[in-house]
Length: 463
Image (cartoon, rainbow, N blue to C red; front, side, top):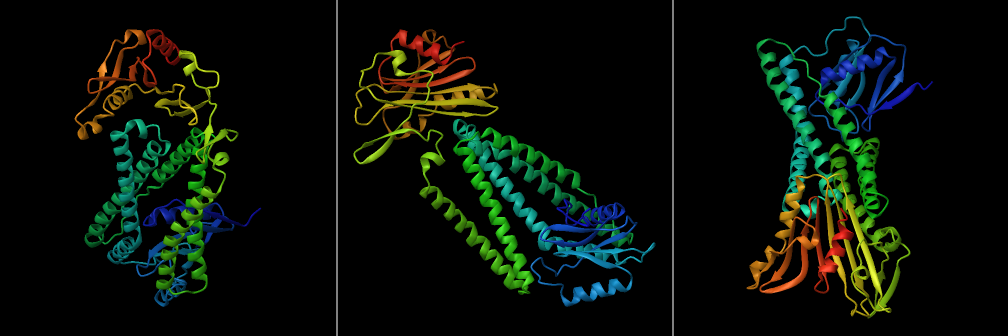
């Protein structure tokens, strides 16, 4: 049986009541806190015992200190005379334990206790949570703005809509932590002055655990939704980048502490290294991607045929398309096409972007492009419809001839609505088709006949 173990404890920094209670429960199970190192709480095996714990705060301490200051060490020695042994240090927090039956409290002045806790919280806890809250609000707001301003892009971008969940959890957690602490501090300050008591803290640990569980479940299913293509590779590389950055900075800070580097020097070097590594690792990541074989790394069609035109290399895709030029009209025997399809899907909607284009060395054969959207969440239908109908409005501000979609007879399409794009008085070969649960934007290279429209409707909406 192992006589040592390390745990990542999920307890608020100011929650002295929760910390003491948790450590007493661990001791009752036979595990005594030995030290707090690199964010991990280290325990050693003991005989189960009823041990009392106390948490104090030393506002002048820092997580960059190579060792306890002289005043801290004096306080530790003073506590030892009363039977209180130091179990661990974490920045401004000091954890003591006492194996006696009725130990004398370490601190007896509740006013001073509240003041010390608040000074310690203002040094790291409150600024860190406030910065994280502001980052969460900014990122959540940006993602929400993108979804409102450009829903056709944002709702099919895995990184945009997916960011709403983790950042909303960050907002909930940080705002709860800040509000809970400030409420406790206000009540405790009054109680300390008027009643001479230190109020216990109310733990937010259940919320913290719930947030982490929800985030883990969400990330698991999000990674699954990315499939096995380039989106998954980019997500894994991004996750690896953040993990490596965190580990390197953490190890550097710990190394400098072991080397007894002064607090201010450690802080400056660590923050500088974090900045340099953030940009350096990103540059290495981008350089590695640029030097890699992009065909095999970011494209599922690693065996795509290529051709050269005017000194440049182009790909000829052979993706399966639900509607092709050949379905609508005859083509020349020597026509060479690239058939490209990109599918994006979420629990909200499915989108297919299809493009059939002739090679650049022979542009005579007609091309065909279309975007098909199947709506799974019905409230999004009107949002997508409006976005498609108004997509050319920004161009109209800079020209006397306006692009506009003009209603046409939807019956050949067997649709609810149909529109044709016009530029001034000229009709173009681009259409918007709205079925009950599906939207289609299609561009022909010719004016389609009623028979070709019927084939299009049958192929793309066979209901």
